Image (cartoon, rainbow, N blue to C red; front, side, top):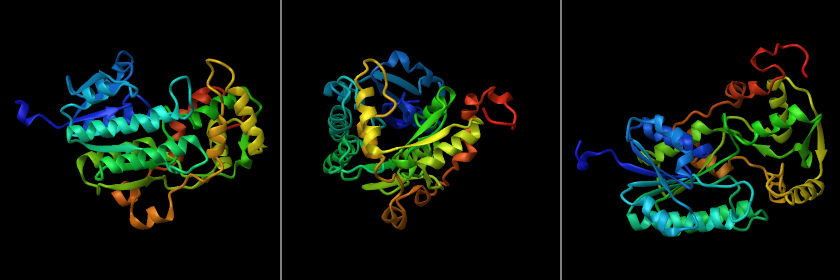
Length: 326
């Protein structure tokens, strides 16, 4: 195979993360050459078997160093940005990762003449009370100013084997006699399967969905925070009290937990702010077909996937019967 007829090269930033690893696999299955740009390539070797020999390569890149970003994008026809954080730690701030970092990736893609797919989040808003949502919103505006034909995907909370939502609360249920319902558990989510999000990314790289738009990705069901935890408990066969926690108290707990060094807090004040707003696909996006269904992707029910990995949290794993819950 000569250089001229090699498959297109796609650079994926954050390819070793929760979303990124599924994106890499989806692109490899389509035959693309995939360059995975991560801070620690030595920890991303598990991605290589997802493709044939030489199809997936690993390069070092740090969003704080623009030169490494531009180097990672060289020769690519498409760039995918999967980088995002849910809480700040040290130099990994929302501004540095989700605003400055996203801008640098967009500038590198523009300089290379590459198209860009950016994974944002439902609720992204440059005027949001939440720093997470605010930096996501600023990044979107910057990206469109540099690359008007970019594709921006806004998923709701994502579920899958490595998710940080259902796994997190299932792990808590193994230890604690009660689980918190921040704000009374009334916040609405539209859980979306990570594989469906990866398929949406792959279709944007294929060029089969319209560029220059923001797509909102949600699953087939709208569930409240309470319903999500009740579903998790039913699958894991554990009954725990669900205690309503006012937003103010939850924010105070998050502030105190954030003071403990080297420990990921169970919740942060910024996440409490996010929970004040429903996380579902907007009526405008649904009406205009800027959804998974509009792309021709049938969303996956959470109930059909959650048992495949939450089974590990049952009292006796897969051997737990259908009797009384623990």
